[in-house]
Length: 164
Ligand code: NI
Image 1 (cartoon, rainbow, N blue to C red):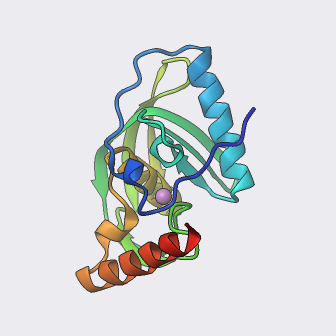
Image 2: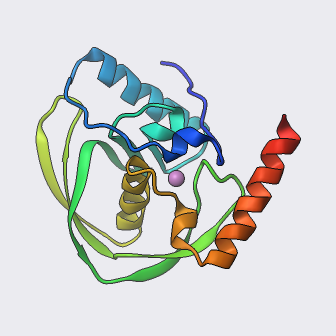
């Protein structure tokens, strides 16, 4: 296994829409295990492939022992709305209250290409929505007010400049 670099906003790779996975081979499974390793080391509860610079529709999630590796996930139904604080490994130190559905139906494939359908509720539904957003190049700041988004953007850009 290998530890991958987690890209931080405003890295342009975070704004690239990921492509559907069509080949379910050892290379895919190696990438997924590297993503697990990277997520655990970063103390995250979810990680999407674009966050490690891969243009593939892959997500790993582990929230309180509920472990999922999602390939080509798609939300087919959404219900309700809940506001809660969330963070993102690509926005270190930023936590914001965001509205998400509190119940979803999701279709995905596993690392061998088998299709699954699950109903997910509560905070875990939030994690699914957040990570699947990454595959469509959508970030948590896109779901904030314009003012808050501008503030965080500026803060992150200043931090990136200081790091160079
Ligand atoms: Ni994220």
